[in-house]
Length: 587
Image 1 (tube, rainbow, N blue to C red):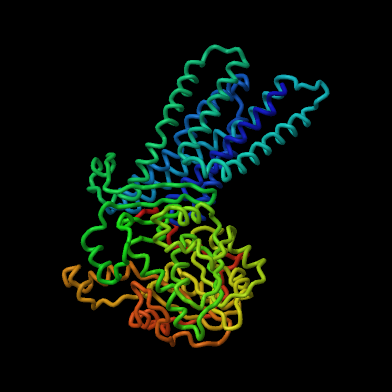
Image 2 (image 1 turned 90 degrees about the vertical axis):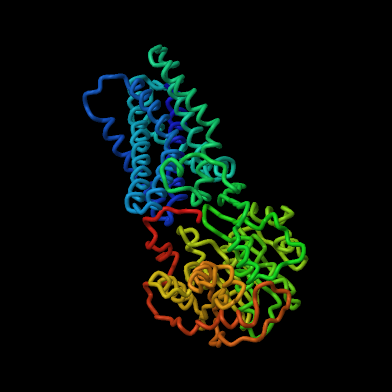
């Protein structure tokens, strides 16, 4: 019965795929994806153990192949709808949260997600014991094979199938299709395996049911892109729906669109609203000078990576001009050689290149697709002023951590612009070890500038925790001067006040949403709160007054040394547990 070994390989391939797909689905909708990804995987593996135990219970007199046929049919059905079930629960949980039933909404999402993981895990766990029983019932190809040799070969095929799935999932499937389509595709493999069992056993009963299952899964695979489009639109635009069950869940055409691309590293969504609204447009006009020849088609565009907000085109200059120009004003000399880690959109690079003193900029980004989009798509290349093809720029496609670890170059300024540390892989880019490697890349008098997600001068406990972790991690890496600064705008602008009906508190609410926090760090003892006037005139937002506002609150943040707050690769403090139970939204 030599077919057992390739058959085991295929079933193990499918089992690990389900595990990865369900964990991925949960992590896309959960704010703290490190915790929930790990829990989804753990529950799946626990389910496999439970399934193996259930298989060994006495009393079932059916042949092993017949039992495996039932398992494969059930697994194909459960696995095929598993990701869909997680998405439905996430949308239902979001509706409950918006209607004031937040705890119930979280319970619905995480409950359904983990039931799906457990159920599919139980089915996957039944496969291996049944395959071993089949190997015992029918002699193996070699008469001399012992039971121990059969078990060893089955286990080898099982582990090899898992290895293949672990390679194919990130390298082939994630860049090529949605996880919902992938789940149905893998379910079809299980259904075909059930058909093969029927053919090999020459059995006639049950064939119609399995063929019906294949038909239903094929139909689901064909419409899965439309289903995923429905959930994507709801994720980004459901705030426009009335909070009644019928209006919230019914499909509708929203005044906007989502353009989605996939890479091995992330899902890239460019979400464009047809109209940003009169208030937002008036606020933008009040604080941001218009740019000659500006492309109006991107006015309502917003970039999301893995469902996380990155920037809104209408207001991105508030963030990027503060990020680039406040540190240059605080520096004693104009930079000549600059390193930018992350920021593959080229927008921060656009600001850095405005200084004539800059002779060379090295930009390192891990995702070639992001770089290609912002280099080759005309509207996006116009947005970053074609900075990615500037002759002074050297683009490196690779991991920022490995680059600073291996490079021997020295830079006057290093900018770190990374996504929120929602998982342990991103958390390493906010670690003591990473900052130590960056410090070795700084020339004498050089400056490190980092984006500090969650630091917004709101005086909250959560913000204090972000500051404590980042400041302690930087201090442990050898930085002696730490200065926070913000993309701060004045709340007294007459045009801005007029846009919100002269309500100062309303305006402050808008401005708080536009405030981002950053940290400047130097290995030398320096006062980075004093600054020189801005050294370039080609600015749309930043003024000397806003520069002063951005640094005005730096003195309110003191380093409170605490080793427990040092984020390290061996002892990660990020991601924070504060959002562990929240469902992610696009607004």
